[in-house]
Image: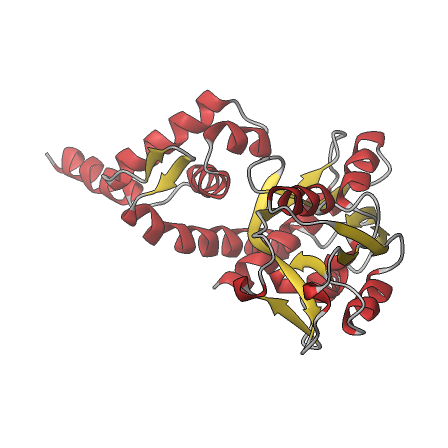
Length: 300
């Protein structure tokens, strides 16, 4: 009788321990709104992710997802779990890193789009350098389409990629608004054809911008492109042109142009983390963890 009672108590406490593997599948599925995309990001099969979500729902005794026309979306209880699951995984990874990364060395090559370098890169690299002082970091700044090519060629080890929200790929870190940007108090947005300043011909936003203008019946001319992010910023600040950036990257000296300016709406973009097809070393995996954790801290 005592033995049976002891086993029962043991099972109860085992049920109170959350499995981080199940939580990772849950968070990835919530981020991508798709079990197939989550499976690709986690390097698992769709069936494995589906099974893990079912196990988590059975363990918690509730449904975490429901399906609509755009894919999977969180139920109210799923929404409650999502933020806490992110924090749980962040703490788990932080503990693992502190206990296991003392011996991490070597090099890691990180690709980042021009517009994201100043927005969030510095604190990520600072924290990583402090945690892994023996790792040499190489930073490659190119447009997102160029970084995808560099990954496939093995020229970089991981990259942060901007892509339309409806084109899931990689591990989704966040969803951002793409917004029109102009000079404070400026009127370049009134000019026709609309003067545009774009960083490069391979800019990830370029097809979406042109498609929005076509659908809205706007003519445009590219006043400036193939420069740096700073030269594009200067052109816009001088009220010579408008541009389109992620809302979180718009500097205080520029203005986000609202719907009252008459420009067509732009689609949301995802910021995705991609690892190269070749096996990721410890230095690469640890940098990926720091990038994930930085986005978690920003959301909390």
